[in-house]
Length: 219
Ligand SMILES: [Ca+2]
Image (cartoon, rainbow, N blue to C red; front, side, top):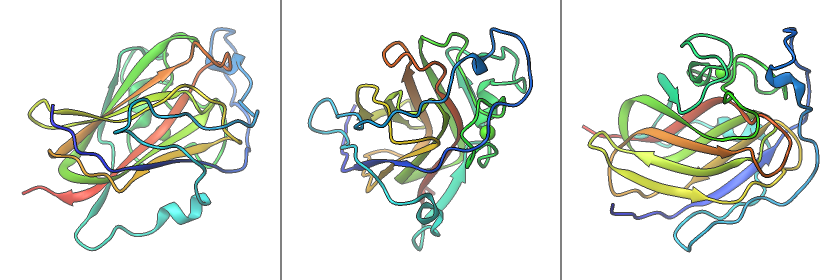
């Protein structure tokens, strides 16, 4: 694995709104309250990975891509663990496909991915239509954020580059857009693996609404 990464990672917090929608089963993710406690962001492990900090307001994230780059939402998704087992079902990995449909709400919402258990470590892998030289990544965390512990960029030929590692840490507010900018990865990227560790904070399900990849298309 050849790794070249120059990153600044930021976690940005927006206002918390909305509450969980209906369902009743006691097992569902809504058993857990939204994370509200302020806290510092995670620290990187190793020198080559990202630095976490506070970011600008969400509105600034919607800026157009730089000339020559494209912005894409995930077009398919799988996970090592899913609250909803079948693709298309509530809280299945497929809930992370496409543009955000939970954000800007902070809510326990079946339109975001959640793992089967509320206290496990699990990985969501999202794929994108076009391989790019990745420059930027956005991860929309819409319930109990701050539990992403690893971000890896994957290439079409099996490449894998870890661009962020850090311990869980409760952020200032919810939802949170975790983002990486200034990425420099030595291979094309067409997928991202997002690992959450829900065994530390005790806040329950970390739900991911959407993932956006920015970069220059690879011919
Ligand atoms: Ca979604």
